[in-house]
Image 1 (cartoon, rainbow over the protein chains, first blue to last red):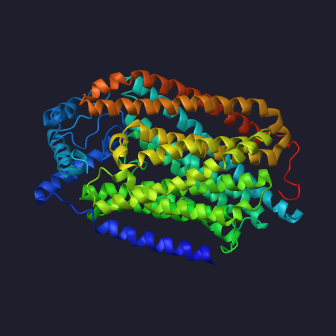
Image 2: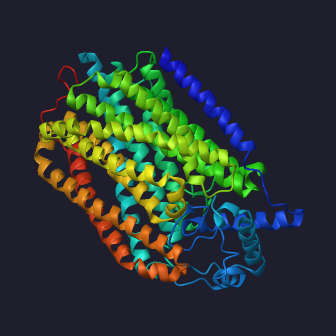
Image 3: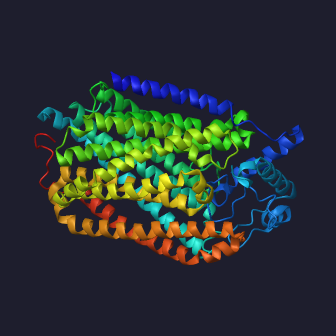
Length: 125
Length: 460
């Protein structure tokens, strides 16, 4: 009986903690206008449809064949032009995805947004 | 004790279990092959870039090896269920329905990857709808599990608790990993990544429960010790493991700008793993004595090697859960070393112990004949896996050093080349070693001779 009670107790805690995580402590700190949000959503969709996560990481999630992209936008060695070049033509390891200009812009908007949220990534607590 | 009628009732289920085992081992070999191809893509960047890019080989590798883990665990459970409950499987046709659905979903997913249709989410890189089919394909297994056992959880041994927990949390975490389909999660990267890490961290815990439960059952049967799986100490560590499954995922999110309390909870829970590590070290002498005494038993030998890998990986996991170190190790191949060490060194050894335990019970004579090949396969895999694991740690250290020196990505990749070579070549040898084991197991399971089966022995 004790085992069942411990399990039930832990499960209730887990459920409550899940609800907490879904609603608190993970609020969006970056304010976005509706057109910005729409462009970012399109960029995210393209990022997922082309499985960019196979080679690149966002906040540590993803593969390691390509560079981490969480702070690529503000990185002084990389930045917007660097991203544009790779998105348009590919690289030694990266295939050419033949993205159109508006698609390149949408992906860059998405990565710019990710970069803006990466406060603790740039300055660890 | 098993009755003769009960044994006859196993025959149909055993056939399904053997088919699942062979399917599972096919996943393993194809998954490893794709892993080796991915390794060569690190080493030779243009290798298959336009025919089968890393964008495809990585998700294929990840999907296949994960599917190996839970399919092999399910195969074992199908085989053990009638023996534990001493009654036939509740729905034998359901086992075959599960098999067909599982195969169908796999074919769909693999085809999607080859054709370039992706969902683009870590671990679940296939289109989202296929996640629903994975959960549906598990339903006959779930029905068979709960209705065959009809377990009284007050007195059930630990492995039944672990299997039940694994099934429950697999459903919860797969469903949770699709929360991104809702705007509330999708349009907030911090929430999306946090919930994704939460779901994936616990999902790994769910299949670990299936695998460790299997390992515990095999250990009970090979050692003849039926007290451990019912002891208060074992249940204490189960609940500690369950707490970690539920809450320790947060150590992956130290760099995510979520509230500090998310990280504090994760850190405190992760450090409770020190108790598990301490227990393993205290038990070490006993483990080694048991391993020496039972070295002739293939399953026991594999379980003992899994113990060594648990200590190595748990030490690494605890180290990378310390926030100050995690900042540097996160997003490097040190995390991959932890994942690979756990997937091959722990999960695969525990599952292969189950495979060879079933081989022994089905065709003991044939197993005896294949023992030299199996022994060589185990040694080759262990040595090459150790080199592979060290190479991954080396790649991680190079990345940390590059980060500290603000070096560009291309330079870091150049410096990592010797480690890439060690990682790729040792990975290929891991494939050879495991191929030897799979070859032996398939030959035994599909062999026409029965050998001196133990399954009619009392106390099976």
